[in-house]
Amino acid sequence: MAQTKSNQSNPARAGSNRVGSAGSRGGSRGTATGSGSSSAASPLPLTSGRGGRRTGNPFALIGNFIRDVRSELRKVAWPTRHETLNLTIVVIALSVVVGVFLGGVDYIFQELFKTLLQLTGSGGA
Image (cartoon, rainbow, N blue to C red; front, side, top):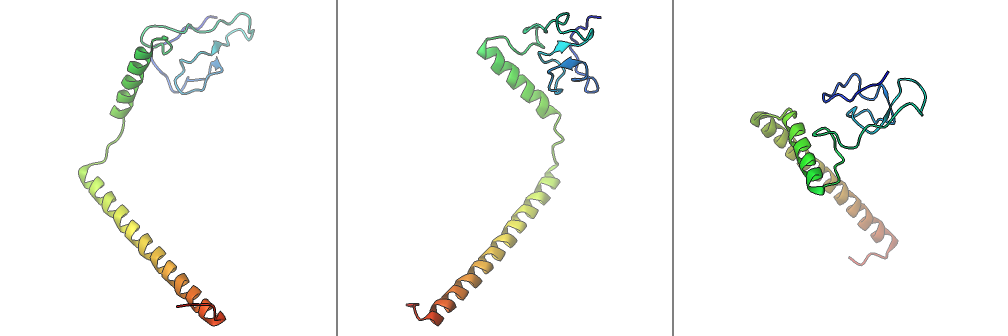
């Protein structure tokens, strides 16, 4: 039974009936596995209208990339202004706490090292 390429992506079927498919889009260059024989299966065409990604034209590839990026950015759940403000405050506060902690550890080791040098008599401070 011959299988045709669909223009719509179905995540449940992506990669389930194709050999060599990464499973991310379902429209990769894998071969159909209907008969189980590798000689009866033919590879998908490299260009198939808007869904085809390998056109050879670098400007078309860039256009497809930009179109895909815009499509994915529309799917992002963007945080609200309030969430962004709260998370920014948390990041700044944690950065200050870590900075103070590391500064304190550095000071302790510095004083310990000075004390050890004075005990051995080679400290010139």
